[in-house]
Image (cartoon, rainbow, N blue to C red):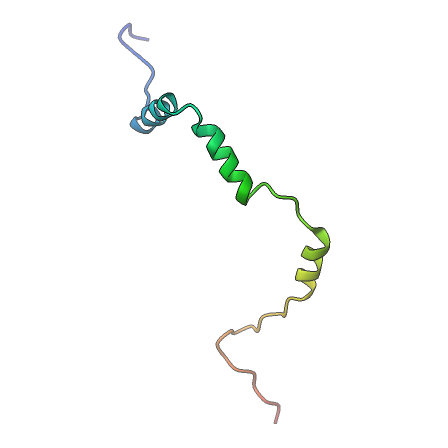
Length: 69
């Protein structure tokens, strides 16, 4: 390994590190925002009822149901 070699950091990595250094509470705010949308407890009964209420899709969606003659 040459003496002048240094590890590569992309521009994006440097930007993110600089942003976190300027705004230390950024990660906490991100976690808080994530918890609002994603980290939720599921209601298993409601999910089961939702799945049971689904109507099966027709093989070809845009065709109307053919009457049996």
